[in-house]
Image 1: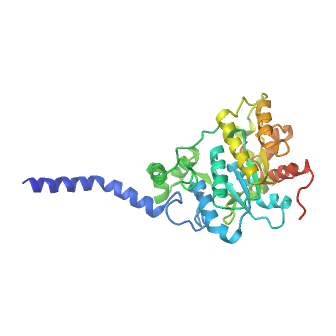
Image 2: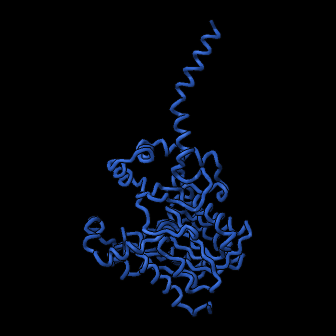
Image 3: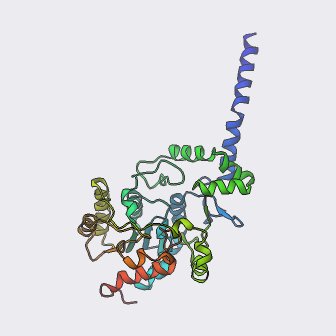
Length: 347
């Protein structure tokens, strides 16, 4: 009798766990965030109309592992999604012909994320010769580490991350009904909710998988030719009121310590570098204290603070959304970084 009761208990328990097993199986098979199956250099599946929010920090490291043996990367762009349109091809104009550029562009990147990636490269005997850092004002205030998908650092890179926690966060995100529905059978309503909640973004117009670079030159063309139509879709941006005062202090002691770690890695390994602080639409730039601190840590000749460029701050047609800058404008900023000092490289 007891044995029969035990069997019934086990059977009921297994039945109760069936939804969990099903979720785990779907998570493994579908791999919605591109973090389980071996990465083959495709972050967005062919035919996708939307980006399923792959973990770009994971994708960046896995892509580097695959392509570096062939490409021998020695020059790196570090930054958040804002860095995407600072194109490797434009930066290479100011680097030796032999330079091979890889782009660590990751949504909501943090200072610790940049430091850990730079240290990862150095610790793995990658000869880093040149580095470009795109650090928007918000990055200085961003939490040290995100505890949510899709902003988790790669466990091979972050000393604070482990694989169990990494997958637990992503699996919990997959349990979101809308994300599950989108992966199983998407409807327009589900897609709209994901976009409005910031859980999904439109696919970049173009992508270079080898160097991990997303960019939007086609969208640039659309804005240049049909600006009125484009900006009519984002009325909140057009109606945005200027904020005349400078940002409050952004770089606290903890952020300053991480910035000093980055500068130490650069100087100890004789890496040539530039740091770019981009502008934002109708928002004034860094405080004088933050500007001085960046100059002290990295050297004024390496720091290019465009956050106070009044022409760009007030030019609606330089932005997709008030934060992300059009590709041709990013190219102009790179040019200006090198125009202020003698050309250091002779191709």
